[in-house]
Length: 176
Image 1 (cartoon, rainbow, N blue to C red):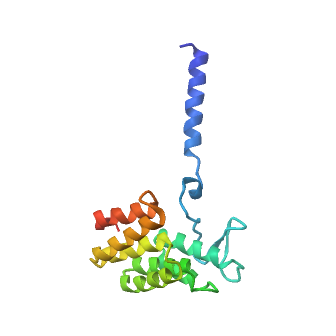
Image 2: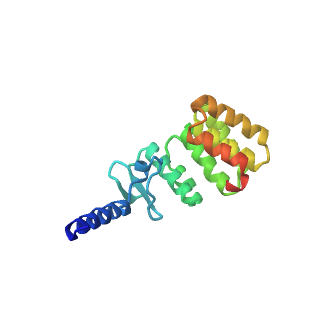
Image 3: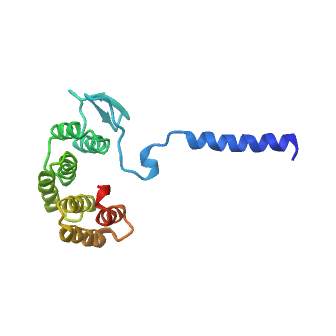
């Protein structure tokens, strides 16, 4: 290979590695997450930046998404505090995320209560069915978890993330 071809190949490989190392927003990877901010701040989806939580005019849906991101990052108490600031706490999404954070804090029965309220509001919400099933696995109620898995299959099939995740939790509860 000539020196010119070697240099061109090195540039292509190096450029590809550099591009691969760039940060990619989570939503571009297919995840439904919102960035997390320092304590006392909230992510404003419209402005696409962290803002002071006090006095911020952030819609409930944005607050719920941010609370979920905090919970997924292991910041469960903060997630619950953000959920306490929503104007309408009785939506399927808010109740599901409240259930998730409380379950992750070890308050599984309380989490199940929130999940069941969410299911009443939206019986076809696959994510709450997944989390309710996981809570049942934690409680050793594999029969009830399998019922949730069957319901998820009717909602979105066996290829959706919620079905796969609950199926994995049933197969290996240590991963929950």
